Image (cartoon, rainbow, N blue to C red):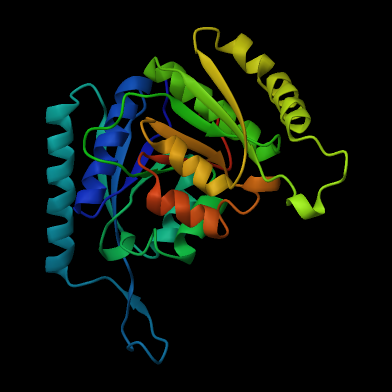
Length: 291
């Protein structure tokens, strides 16, 4: 039994509601409980210029937040009666709280649009902080209300982060009863910098052999998951965004090499988080699901 919860960052927005639906569906597939969490950003009593003690918002605002979370929990039991759902209202920094709570979570799930404490979560350094330091996978729910029925897509490059991404991607594909598309994207040297004997087809074949070796043990562990492999030279961000069209989920590691090195630190990260047509899972660590 999966005792670690799926934690959803919730603020009542359309994006948060989509994240909650995704989390509930995942809980139904995996047997994991779901925690609906609202975070009040601390207010500085002394004002924005001089430092001061941190206080909760007024009591009425807290009560409104609790009612919103309670309504979300009640609605969740109506749509997913077999999923254990609880609600929680806490105060502090959304990024810090989520990072800390990820130590006990199976998964963090966030919407791609929000307001309040989660409103800035996908717009700057907070996103990088949560994704880069969470102790469990982080899923950012993008796409329309009706998610695609295609495969799970994983971007890999042979790094430790890619191995964790593969673990989560195979797990998700198996739970969903769908296939897995594994993509190895790399940027070949510009023509004017290539050695005279450089052969693009030969390099692609070598990349394919390396990827097949990497996948061998996972194919044995998940024999019922149909795996498609693509080795594609070109811009990593564009390739992964294109691959998200029709996919159920795109999975990447939070650290990589080659084309995936900057995945959560620069332009490629922004392309996926802002332009992917499906939810995006970022995997830095895999939790011990039995605990």
